[in-house]
Length: 118
Image (cartoon, rainbow, N blue to C red; front, side, top):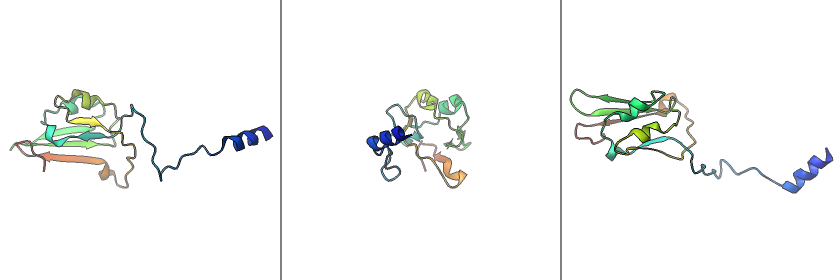
């Protein structure tokens, strides 16, 4: 028992200052999905490959589409970013995804017929 205390005293503090000083994510970390608005064409390749159905693309009869990401369902596999032909999706290194309300974990973007986001 005394050896344990000696070792602890020699080691010193090993905890980090989180959350005051956030730790960076590891280099290969797959975090929250980000949509690059200017590159999205609404072809729904991302929605077709998503294993958890976290992404949906709904086309409007008058033109345009709505892209939706539900972070509650996302498993951060990266298949959506690999499938996107225009590179409109990427995985960030964001790991603090807690929210007070479930709807805060939804990302919904509506595009007009010309491809501009509103």
